[in-house]
Length: 498
Image (tube, rainbow, N blue to C red; front, side, top):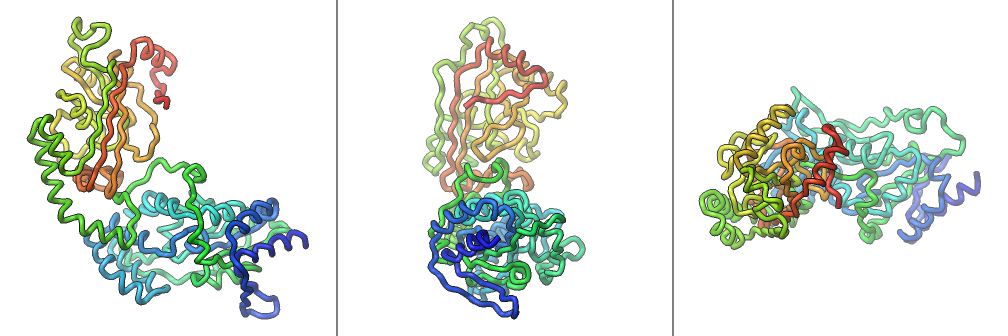
């Protein structure tokens, strides 16, 4: 037992140590030189001790490299309240900085949450995890993940961090303040921290080991929950703020759970400088959007492509030699049946860009499309019913009339992953052309799961330089199509091999 305690005490070479003496409730500091690399190597050597350790850690101070909470509150303000609420938060942020501390956090909570409906607040699970992961330091994350039981303490409201801490960090208990709700709406005030709710069995488990230890980690000058950590931990290690700036970002391959889906419109981290750039761009951005919209709606492809490129849109289209308009076996001359273009799904504009790349009139089918977008779409759009038999007959009828574009993933995905394909399209024709699509957004995402889908094209064309890359690949041969259907069956799932 004593040897293990010595190993634990050796962490003090990397952090200042806050020890709680047995004889008094006062707190003593022991200063030491911070060395993040030494801290990391020591953590790797702790092994069994760390697995038997209950860790109380301050989320913002231990995991996040940045010391500013403004980007996360700006995400809440923009995604839940829109441009106006985000602008108010941005204009008042200098006053928040002047106040600072816990009162500054309370001010941002009020500005972001006042009047927001509780049942619509899913940003903590759908938007914030992506930005938290991008700000997590690899050194702090490695230490936290090596401990057995984890208790996360945060200055942020519970609704903002609980989903991330439990789904991606695997904490057992989240200690954060709740938001007050009146009539189903947030009033922008937080309740007092209730530290008495921390039950010993809930934290350490029913079978508490005699060798189990409780330690705490937080950031220097960010120790707002001293009562929580000092009541439960023998030692509290203070992360040096200067050393945190040298931490490396957590690489995607080390994410505890693959980030496939995330929501929200903002494609950048909304720091104060980046937010200022966004608001400065918006007046010009809306003017450019109207130009792009009018050009794309009313001008032919040969004219709209260079004009759109002049306004900043970047479109790259490549066509394989074997994906020509005439089938290799001459079926098009014998039977006037259309060709099926199958593409991965990035935005609602995918079929339009496929039509632009092929330079011919196409028809598309979709599951979720707003009435407004369906009316103004510059191509024929048919809504599917999710009834396999009806949809199959509808698509077969459309193929008999001409070429068809389909996105068999069924939903959009922003990350570089290919989702499960519906096998229905492979049962309709042998003349299938796969299309690979990639979309890059520098300011706004042109997709949403919880917002207004009719605004998707607007947000896409509001980007200063929206990038669309289309690759029309070689036709699938009849033998490949038949073998896929036979191996996967009618209920199988086809995936693109990369």
